[in-house]
Length: 325
Ligand SMILES: NC(=O)CC[C@H](N)C(=O)O
Image 1: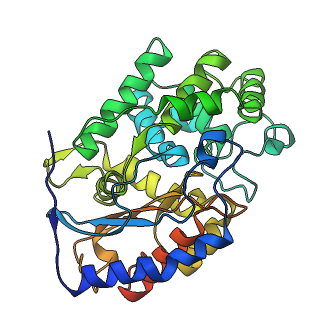
Image 2 (image 1 turned 90 degrees about the horizontal axis):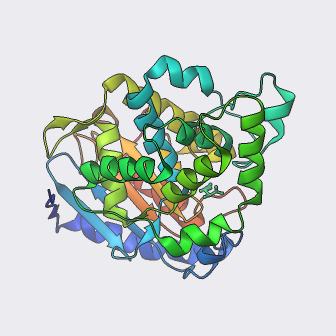
């Protein structure tokens, strides 16, 4: 079912356009991810933002038609899906909700903290565990479920970008190591190659910034889809997802992001960022009933966050006093 958004054309949308151009030059301070060869070919100068509110009001700026892959943004989605498939107690027995302060693909805590339970679902170790526990008898079935869940949020058909998937599948030595480690300590529900296929395909799902904004909007609304008027996932799971986004969503920059921006957000090495702005958090903005924000800027910093994207998001949040704190 397609969802129609009404583009707001006023000084707020003009401001967004200007802010995108103001922050675009900061892309120079970052680089496109190169450990996934297909991502290295992206244009680092691109920057786009889409903000969507519960009544379909929308403000966009920059390269809004650009397609990119979800990468780690998918971790929030599969965490929510796993909680629906398996129930919260099952999921929390296999993945914790503690930030690590380590890089997103770190392996160290799987050995240094027994029994090797991954610290949270927003880092690779935890996300691979989560992908392994999704319902479905094959990777294809699990990926189809992820796609259909996302399609319910964004209101259109989505697909896996095969080139990006293949590019990462062939170079995923670190993620394979993580998966073998998890298997050894009993934190993988299916064979290594199957878990990896699901995980890397979910990362390679292709979206644009407005799709991201829709994901953020539904999370901000505690799982309720304001346009389709249905509860897509339980409120309790949405609250947990938001808490994980605040504490772990921006990798080992999550503390600074919470301190200086103050919104539940999740980034990916493609340069994607999704932010969920609940309705009490944006009273002074053009979105007083809350909104979802999608950002894309493929030049990322050493931690893995979009350089221009984070700066743009901070500016929007500052200007419109959007914060959950
Ligand atoms: N931080 C990310 O976006 C990482 C996702 C990427 N597919 C990986 O596993 O390395």
